[in-house]
Amino acid sequence: MNEKFATLRVEPRSGGVLLVTLDRPEVANAFNTRAALELDALFRRIGSEPQTRCAVLTGSGDKAFCAGADLKERNSLAESEWRAQHEVFERMFLAVRECPLPVIAAVNGASYAGGLELMLMCDFSYASKTARFALTEVSLGIMPGGGGTQTLPRVAGERRAKELILAACPFSAEEALAWGVVNKLCEPGRLLDEALEAAGRIASNAPLSVRQAKRAIRDGLQTDLISGMRLEIEAYNTLIGTEDRKEGIRAFNEKRKPKFTGR
Image 1: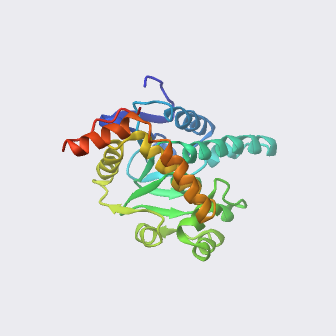
Image 2 (image 1 turned 120 degrees about the vertical axis):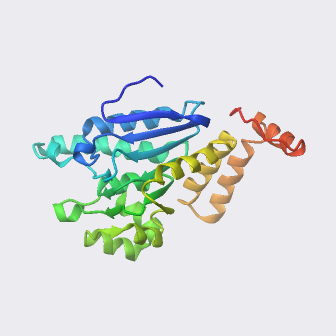
């Protein structure tokens, strides 16, 4: 991957893992229009790259994962410009959510407003014990517009989400773990290593199987149980004719580690 980004650092790691770092530490990694366009383009593309099997998304430095939208840039926008910019943000959030690859957030610091919404679009999250979280939009005369009113209730429950969103309440890493907002807390110096280790475990599995399992979970949760089970079987059946399915069974019977190729 040779493309250069102005607001991101993109680093291929071993085993098919891609490390994506929001790289605007001077503004707590807040995303401006350029950053949103670059995130959108990156996450729409990597799903078609066979060499990439899992992505880790983190922030530059040790103080902030992402502070949300860059309000300095927004300060001078007319209403029509604000709406147009927000459409770019909407595409960015959906690109992360709809990426066929697993995406792990490594939350290294403050995750506020759109930064928390971006984290919630990832498949799961590890966080530093010093991380802080909040959806602060109603205190600014707006409201969550990056999926926060939909994703937070789905992980933390309706009543908890109402409390946090309507009161713009910040919450700690320990509370985020207790409420299911993050999966694991890590020592600050170990966060990225542990997120990359999890990504490596995912990337070592059959990539087509991982993609189909992610799709079945994500899409199945949006429907009733029986429809979700039918969706699961549809996804399962696409794997029967793959070379990786045959290799997995051969490797099991030969008592060796499988060599998956994504075919």
